[in-house]
Amino acid sequence: MIIDKNIILERDGKKPILIDAFYSEDKTNQPIIIFCHGYKGFKDWGAWDLMAEAFANAGFCFIKFNFSHNGGTMENPIDFPDLEAFGNNNYTKELDDLDAVITWSQNHFKSNSKIDTNTICLIGHSRGGGIALLKSSEDQRITKLITLASVSDFASRFGSEEALKTWKEDGVKYVENGRTKQQMPHYYQFFEDFETHKAKLDIKAATTQIDIPMLIIHGDNDNSVNISEAEALQQWNPKSQLKVIENADHVFNTKHPWSKSELSEELKTVVETAIQFII
Image (cartoon, helix red, strand yellow):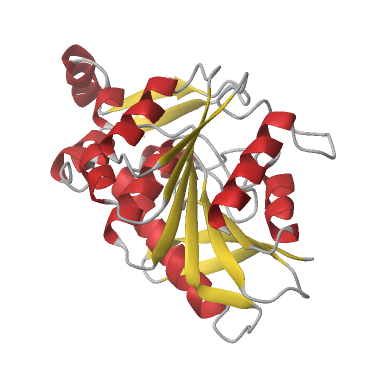
């Protein structure tokens, strides 16, 4: 297996993106899978490397990346040293990042006869699921979509009118990172950008328009994103498939750091279900 870690995608006038690629040097016609991490997430979180290896062993070219404003840097992609970037992140930036990674993947592997650059599946976890849903509804390059513990809307997550008023007055609000104990800023531009692009960022509207195969995976013990959000997604796209993983939490019973050499049983089920769906 070829594991190419921390490839830097430089972009004119924009922050660079850090990318990993996992694929086989022996197998042919390997479809591309692009994985989008969630809120306060990163490509090297927990068991994501093991998950990438599992997909690569099954014959896929698995690409994961850090959103450009997730708070990581090229030198330290894990512990959120760039809180200023984190505070200036928003959904349209993440959509733009994903577009850049899709384009990069097709260009990077176009001369590699073992990679099928015309078959691209998006997998999005949590907030990344919402981004993957939006992108799949507008981009003809995407051939299949899988959501993992995905959110079903963005608007409800901004809080009450009173909270929004305080946020606007202060210009910033803070969320503590449970692992690093950092006070992570969200500048009010996040909400302003959402309001400006509300129609484009409407997950319900996007989901009803998706006409490619779509698989929704959710744990029934998810305390971060309720399983009702998965049920809503399936209701909006009745052609989609819903797979409920029993006893699985928001990260399918893994954590960061993940010191084990194997996936949790729940995440293993996620991978097996996804592989069967894609092939």
